[in-house]
Length: 109
Ligand code: 5GP
Ligand code: ZN
Image (cartoon, rainbow, N blue to C red; front, side, top):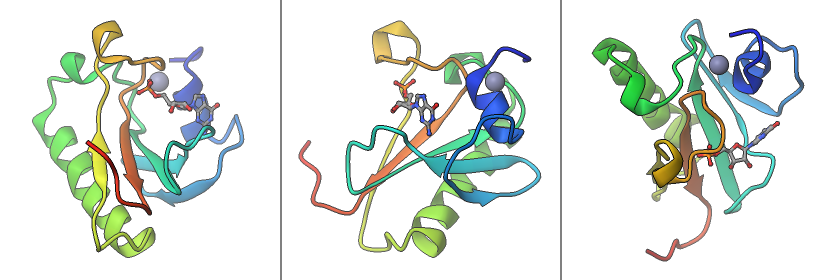
């Protein structure tokens, strides 16, 4: 998607603070962090929302990478929160599927 913000970030066309990348996934710091650690994990492939993703293997890869990034890259073995906002009712602002990893302090519900 040529006009998608997160496609451009994954392609390196827009700068970001990268924390991890591989052939399927790109992860970077959220520009407006809601916790001491706030990272977004995205597929390189453009998928607008979780509701639009009909690729179980991709979802499995994303969650596996979230687990790896949180523990091995971000040092959040003590615990963290994973959030996916879905469409307008879920508060989604950027329409490229992304998984929030939040950690670094005790999170309220
Ligand atoms: P959503 O509300 O769609 O689940 O979350 C979108 C997230 O993307 C927000 O937390 C917002 O701060 C973050 N964000 C929006 N634009 C940019 C950007 O240009 N760079 C980075 N690193 N994060 C962004
Ligand atoms: Zn995209």
